[in-house]
Length: 285
Image (tube, rainbow, N blue to C red; front, top):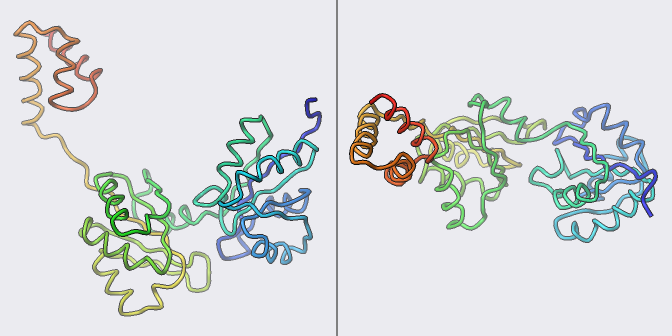
């Protein structure tokens, strides 16, 4: 039997430190919903107490999220509104919730995001590194080999790189950055919106020196922001060489379609681009 008045799942962003950052809309929604799904009910219970709210809560974390889908879907089917919150910041952003939201969307449930605090956006807004394009990679792998491999895969990206890091791994991450991106500008955003909020700027080596000299700076949760790789410019010589190759292919009677495949294999890039370029050269002769 279809649900006549199903409830809504609200995905609610909560403060990452300063409780004053909780939006008026988030407070209203938390007060109106029937129950709250929280990453840690004890931790979130303190927030609700601060707001003077007493709501039924159930835990939803990485170890039980898949099992919670049917339970929460049942509540929604019965017409209950539910708020999903994480320990801090926006749910699903390196926090639980993706499995739940994906499954409920597949069931055509009504899902409403309530925007608010997010550590990566907060850090980017105050870091002074380019924000027009950035890549967020969550937490780097804990094992040294996997961490190095991950950074190897990211180091050629031209976008600003953003990672989360914990205090007990921040020095290891800086050492890995020094080994693979030694000349890059790096910003460490620490304890965002809290009393000891700090932005440290420098190379991986200089930041290692600062944190080693003052262990207090290695405490708290970190957002690590790394300047992207310098853009790779195509030289004039490469352009001439490419045109020479394309012209030679046409002179030898190679068809445009086959020539595009050969060019893509030798020079890289997309076949469609080389196809259009070959057509243009062919039209000039």
